[in-house]
Length: 241
Picture (cartoon, rainbow, N blue to C red):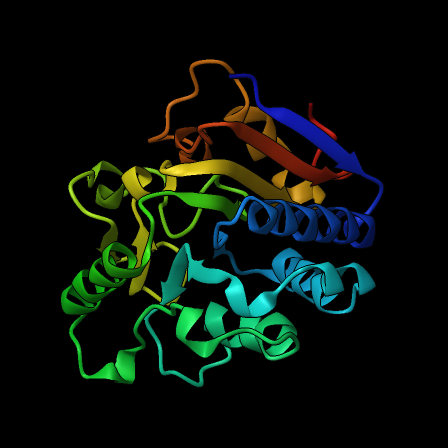
């Protein structure tokens, strides 16, 4: 399946486009009589998207209490740390719409009393217990090195394929301890949406889209949706295509 590229002029236009598409996709899944399952990402462009979703009048077409939210990765820090993806998602989106707290499945924090490995196992159990076996949408940011979630180039976590969540130690990007969905979990989705902004990531976008790209060199190349894969990019991120 050929991945689609959707270009926007700038980060704000990109956020608006992805927000509108996400609302429409959630409404579509609910119209089918299913509970949508969405894996959120972190980062500055994700925060813009979340704010755009929360402020969109089209969001009234969605029953936010009937959406399951998961996270693709998380920094293993305290619950209220500003570094947590979940904290930003709550602030910008989840606390702004009428979600059911029981349907927001955050990854454990470092103050949970669990070791990193135990936290990874616990989140695997959460996804297994509450998930349908397939996400409707997995949203992924990407770093200038081509990493997605907390799967970094050359890192041993790239080769973990026998579980849903992996404990990541020695991350090349601080903090060093993280939790991440594995490729096996990320690829169990109907749609993969990469959301990428900025010229610093243009080379990685181009490398990830090269036929035969090695996921050990550019991990983004290792995630593909079963029905669609879309690269949502602004003009700067698309400049090397």
